[in-house]
Image 1: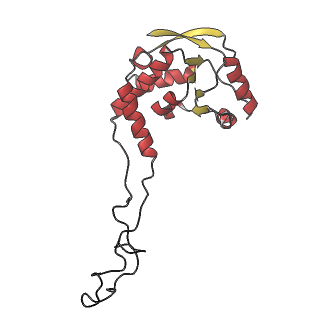
Image 2: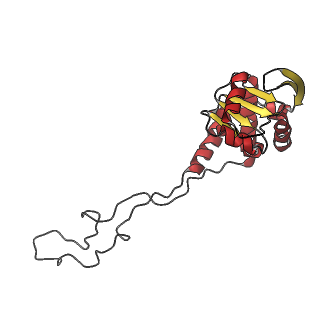
Image 3: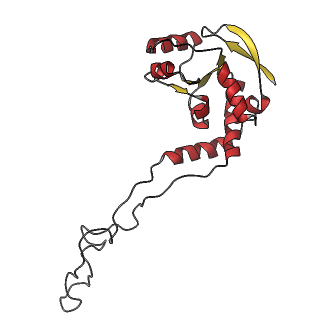
Length: 206
């Protein structure tokens, strides 16, 4: 276990908590980052690109002219890829871009990414984030006090916070169950509330 400082929204140190070394002291493994981020981005692709081949293009059932005697080249269909309006050769077809990554690898990559942020002093643990109303200025004010710009905020279900932060550039709010490697690496800093730290440890330290 490692002792980590806990701050308030004015960046004043108020206490310390012990964090699990399995989750927050794992070695940085760049290959795991590559594999997991590749799988995440591949899964976002719809894979619906498609074209019509010669069997899918309507028409072309009748032979344009007889086989011999016309002086022209043989032709069996006006929907041949050689003809204007014909089918497409070797075009894209609907497919899945999913890349299979074992659950254990995804967990290790997430622990490694969180540990890297903590080691680089780019993770800030906050005791709580209270938002009695939806107010974007409140989010901007808190981030200004913390001295942060590109931030991933990890907080339990807090609709007021999520709605307040959605229009702030370079800021994203995620619930602990939705935390992923891509977002951890994308944003420069992480702000996480103390209850979420405990929740993540319960999920990842198994």
